Length: 175
Image (cartoon, rainbow, N blue to C red; front, top):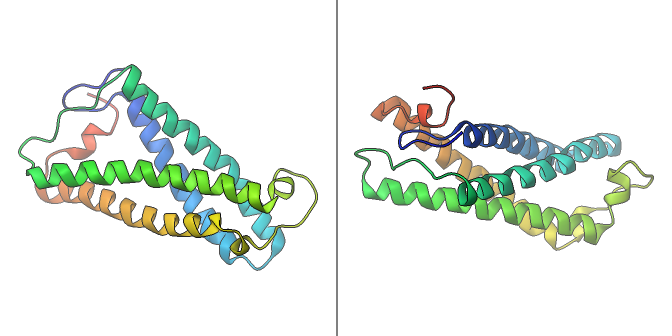
């Protein structure tokens, strides 16, 4: 249940991978809804997108609470240059900031547009979301999130394939 100096706990690993899968589905459904011409397809994608975003919010708050109240992160990777540790810390912090901006702008977009009724099973049509200010933050946040995920995944692959320092074992189950 608790993290060790060389690896994350099962709780942290589970939250990480569930969040990762959900975020990729959110990005796909969000961009899919943005380009969908068919209103039925758009509503269908957004009916997946909105509840999944709420799940990501719960997972993210749960992860932060877990670290503050019950667990600690493993030690930094051995022999990693200081700039890599600083970069990893910055990317992780920005991932959280961008996730909260995305969640907040999504909620604001639903509230400002009145789309909640159509998305929560009621009648109605979807508005043109581009007419609402939170859409700008939501769209830019999605692009920034993709860039941060590329940096995060790229660094993990670099550590795994080039440095061969077992980085993936820190964020996986087992001994």
